[in-house]
Picture 1 (spheres, one colour):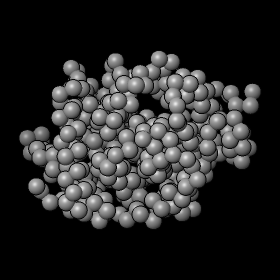
Picture 2: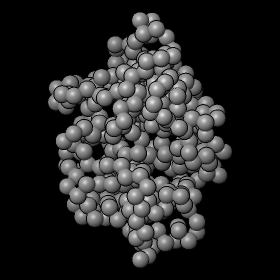
Picture 3: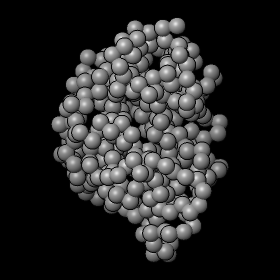
Picture 4: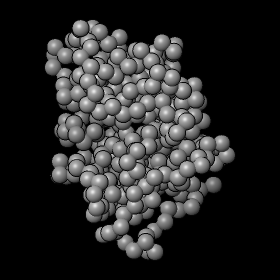
Length: 351
């Protein structure tokens, strides 16, 4: 058994063995039951690659080594004081089997109203034992009060004052992974939804949660088919000890929707590295981030063309752990429960 150097909270051999076996198990399940018949639609790079493809390093074939490499990143930044601040912000919330969560500032307030209407109509009537939580990351006092009165949810003020200053840069999305980490312990399934997410009226909820329980999480696939290598800052790859060319064949996962199963593998091997990146000044909220918001589709499309923040980091983690079997974590045709409807507004609350 390969010894894994990871955080003290998982220093015992039993814990390390459990994590490794969880990863191996999930890969076996992916290969046996949910291996899709289609490949990821990735628009690969054609110019200005970081290395000739023949000399680009490959992922280590050993799941144990790849897991060790991901876990090693959690030693780069101490996030525990910030995790305690996040835990304190949700201390009064009850635990439920399903915890649905989103976050909103004033510029997405009307968009979130459409999400609230959507989940109350198509999802909540079909479930029992659920909680709906919205984090206020920049509402006006009037918007906060109105949402509190009418959303049938709990609204939590995000504790910006107790976190690094750069977390206040909302377009870096560093606030998202800590929210998920803080709330997953209060759930069996943590469901993250951006304000633009819309559930279908016949969403296959049973299948979605069954897949999440078996695989650990379920995410969305970017329909544009862009490569992680193109839409991620080189600094983020450096944080994870990788090179962009290693991710050229890997399509982006989406950060706007995810179902996270409350289990050791997800909490330690997915969320802790993700949160560590969020609180590391050079990983998720990279310098000059505002210049990397535009991800054009027309060529040329070099590595590091733009940056997708939380989405880039999450894509690196799951692609490294699961490689070609990352598709087992994605909503693919026949399993889609939600769609993205950006700039689709409903002025519903209070009307």
